[in-house]
Picture 1: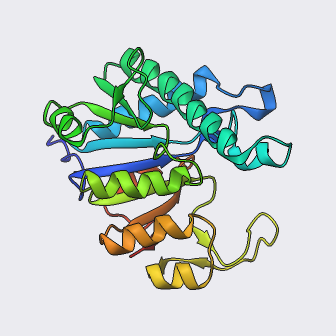
Picture 2: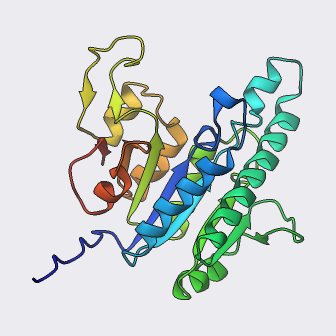
Length: 243
């Protein structure tokens, strides 16, 4: 019997924005749950097998957020740098899981920490892609007052990604919070201008603007839904497309 051909990705190079909350298991009180991170690594390995250049930007909200620190009396600039260091902790956890799964990876960080990661250098990043390595970008943009969403849009622009995949816990962009209103309308497609005009907070305005200027489509999808990442890559309808 002839085996069906593997579905191939419609994209050559993708950037996946993964929030820090994806690493945690709140029920067990774990900011970083090793089994959860291992499951993420297994999914990324299957995606990498499609022949896609994969880069990730990881958040740090499971450990620390600059904005939340400010509400507790920590200077916003200091808090943002603390948040950037939190993203590196998550990046190291993910790198460890990916390497144990058999993938060759590199972490590049916007703040130089030569003992644990490379500085972000575009030519070096492109060289890693040529070698088949998976890249993890940490420490945001290296500047306070910029979110990791903006960092994802910036890195996607720099590496000329074909798409930015925004991983969330809901299956797209809604007019209202679906956890509050189960009947909230889900948008299947949006223009960048609509996302900005309606102040949809799935990503910040700077991130939407960067993607609009560089013509990078954004797919917002439920990362935790079985097979969702593969569907997004193979062009099947999923989540919300912002373009």
